[in-house]
Length: 97
Image 1 (cartoon, rainbow, N blue to C red):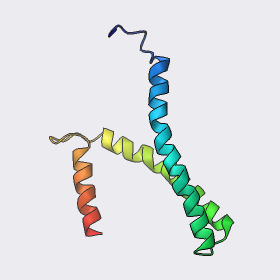
Image 2: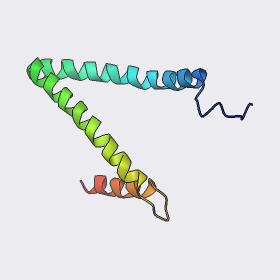
Image 3: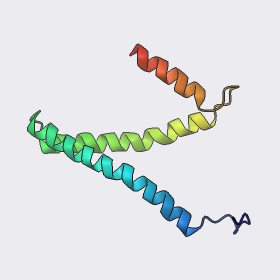
C-alpha cells in the first residue's frame, strides 16, 4: 500500500467508493419518504401542499441543526471523549421523554 501523500488529495477511487456506500442509505430513505408522502395524503387526508411544506421545513431544519450540533460535539473535550457524553445524556433524555 502506498503511504505517500499526493498533496493531501483524495484519490478518485476513494471518492467513488465512499459515494457508493451512501447510495444504499439514500436509496432506502427515498422509499421511506415516498411512502410517507402517500400515507399522509391518502390515510391522514392532509393536502399535498401541506405535506410538501412539512417535508421542506424538516429538511431546512436539518440543514441548520446538523452543523450546530456538529460544532458542539467538536468543541466538547471531556475525559470520556468528544461524543460519548452526548450519546449518554441524549439516551437518558430520550428515556425520560
